[in-house]
Length: 360
Image (tube, rainbow, N blue to C red; front, side, top):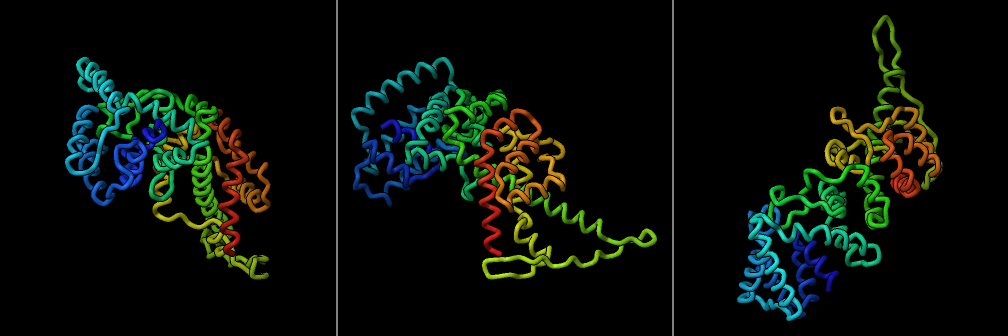
């Protein structure tokens, strides 16, 4: 039952009503044969005020329980005996806490336990693994950096106070005075952070790929500028660059440098540019990778390093990639994480690169 209580909290916070109904069925709050089309709208109406943006900041566990009991008039919702005793105890304890602190939030205090349970059990539990992915990933499959920060802080026992929350359940509330970056990196490298590793490796690989594509295309522009002949201080158009012979799955062919660049290091679209200038910086800063507040992402991607990384990707030499990654990350705390995850990160970037190669 503990796993379903954890996933119910996650599904409630992410407003996944269908999955929440599954949790309630397993917890015996709803019968197996309940009419989902009838239940879902009622659950949405009753529970939405408690969620982020719902406006129910001051509501508490007792109020939530009363609203759920009111819902029994419309849907076959019931409180099983094992939950009834627990709910009474919780309501009593919460009442005592609220007498001393009217802003007390039971869910906020319990959130660190929920997160630790989720992270420690997700590796060997497919249901909790799916709940973890649902909690952290957005609709495009990208890690939500602010939510990741809140999850990491909560996993270390630090939750945001109620004044920072928007709603009874707010997974994006980050504590003002949380753990340091070094402490977060140490946690990610510990057994408690292992379940996050696959998600973060994938996200880090995609973020590095965006930075590489930007740097590669900038280096190509600079190369073209250097090739332009100058006569009497005037810059003439650069001479056309010769085609490059390639052996592809369709046989040998000649490819222009521009076509090869667009195929292997395509230009970032608007969404990717926005991500690289905003969420990516929060994400990388959490991992101890330097982000200049004025200049943004700084991975020290000189043209020479771009060539080094592209050569390593093309020749599938992961050890060279790992060395390049370590050199790119200046801060020691970020370097330790990159060194620990280097092989997996190299594999993630190599897979992205080879997917583009096969399209040639």
